[in-house]
Amino acid sequence: MPTTEANGRVQLVFSLFDADGNGVLEADDFELMGTRVVEAVPEAGDSAKTRLLDAFRRYWETLVRELDTDGDGRVSPEEFTAIVLDPQRFDATVDEFADALATIGDPDGDGFVERAHFTALMTAIGFRRANINALFDAFEPVGGDRVPVTTWADGIRDYYRPEKAGIPGDHLTADAAR
Ligand SMILES: [Ca+2]
Ligand SMILES: [Ca+2]
Image (cartoon, rainbow, N blue to C red; front, side):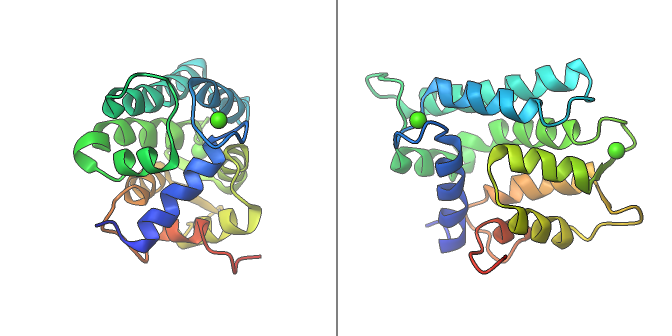
């Protein structure tokens, strides 16, 4: 069974990805989200942008494939949670997504994500500013207020791990943060 924290983490993602707020995820939600997130770092290279758009599409395609239903192209919160918190079904997808998202946050390619880029990307996804700052701080930024790309990518992978609790990613679901 996933931890309470893991359920909370992915339920939050569901609510953010449901960009039109109709209670189910559809292909359009992912196109909307992908476009919005890519625009958050205008100076990123085209290959990084394409890679992230592809990662969002694969995220959606994995959901549809794993659902194995009549293919109405709609994913409910329950279906979403069951898939993304099952590493056997979702590991490869989240792996690619994590690397693509963290990499676009490093447009100058020095291996580090600056807070401004991190904040722009996470705001585009829909997370709240206080939670974003708390997460960045939990990654223990180094000189210049930046975190290694790999730290963020690993943090995203952890976010989807069903057995994890008390991780930096839990700062995103904390209501107390202001
Ligand atoms: Ca929707
Ligand atoms: Ca950088």
